[in-house]
Image (cartoon, rainbow, N blue to C red; front, side, top):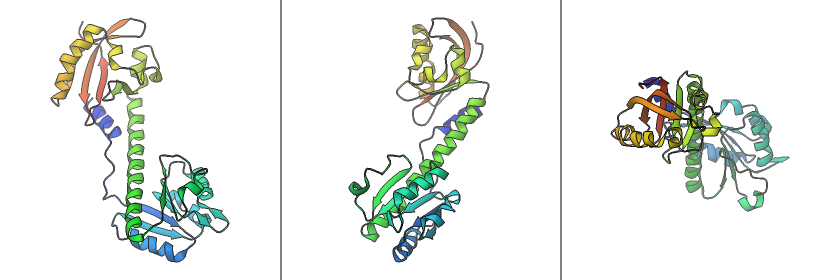
Length: 259
C-alpha cells in the first residue's frame, strides 16, 4: 500500500525534472550565421545539448531523438508553422519553440494554442537567448513530468486496490476503475465531484475530525469506514487516507472494515 501511495505522489508531483538532466535540442534556421549564434549561446548551458539544421526536412529526421525543437518562421519554400505541422505528425507532444523575427500578430491565425508550443520573438541576443533557454527547460521539464505521471497513473490503474486522488479543493482529480466500481460508477462519473458525496453525512464528520486531522499532522490514517453509493446503498470497507505535498489526499479502499 505504501508503494502505491509513493507511486501516486510521483505521478501527481508538480515539481519539474532536475535541471541536471541533459536536454537535447535541435535548432532550425536557414540563416547559418544566426543559427551558429543560437547554438553558441545555448551551449553555454551545461544541461543543453544543441544540434543545428538549416533545412526543416533534414531536421525531421532527428525529431525522435531530441527533447525540444526550436525553429525560425520565415524559411525558403516553407515556414515554421508548416514545419510544426510536420513535427506534430511524428511527435504530437514534443516541445516546440517558434523563435522568429516576425511579430506574433502576423502569424496568430495559424499559431496553435498548445501546452507544448511556444512563441518567442528574436530580439537582443544577450536577453533573448537567456529567455529561450528558460523556455526550453520549462517545456521539457513539464513534458517529462507529465510522461512520468502518465506512467505512474497507468500503473495505479492496474492495481487491485480502489484508489482515488482528491484535489486540494475537495473534488476527485483521479479515480481508478476499481474505486469507481465500488460505488457502482465509472471513473468519469466521480471525477470533479466532492469526496464527501461518497460517504454518509455522519461519516464525513468523523473523517474530517479524525482522518483529515491525522493527515494534516503528516501521518496516514487507516480505519473502517461506511461508504455510500449515489443510489443511497452503503457498504463498509477498510480505508487508508494519506496526504500529498500539494495538499491533495489519497483514498485507498483495501478491503472490508470492521462493522
